[in-house]
Image 1: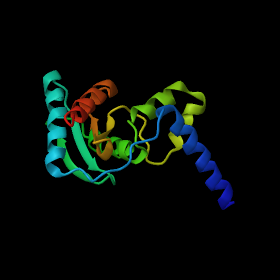
Image 2: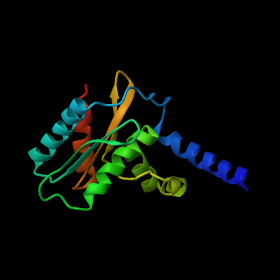
Image 3: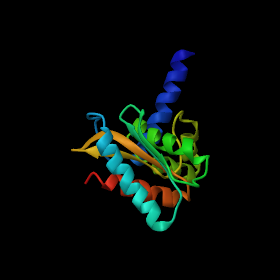
Image 4: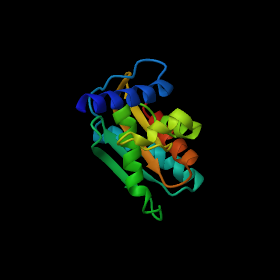
Length: 160
């Protein structure tokens, strides 16, 4: 029975990995430090403020542990946990959380993503890369998933 379950999870994970990866995933690097995490969050926050969106921003290290967190005044309470989980999705699976959103939206075999433990299928989680290595991830929640993704991307762009 154990072999059967292991095989099933291997098949599911491999099936889910293909759509989001046209190349080998980036390796993990040194964990993000607090100054860099603040810089990333500040860029995401600036994008949210520019558009008058109330957001929650979470930056995690390569292990998914929160390094920096900010909740804007009047951001919806439910987004507090969602932002953290979007960041953890991005760092754990080495890809933007939008990959899982797109898989679910495609239906059929893409619905397998709903069964992946720890995968939040909503845009707004993006791995953070320094010198081609994943140092952490940003997760943003509070408005539409498109707006969440836009703010997360602004944060990730702060590293370029």
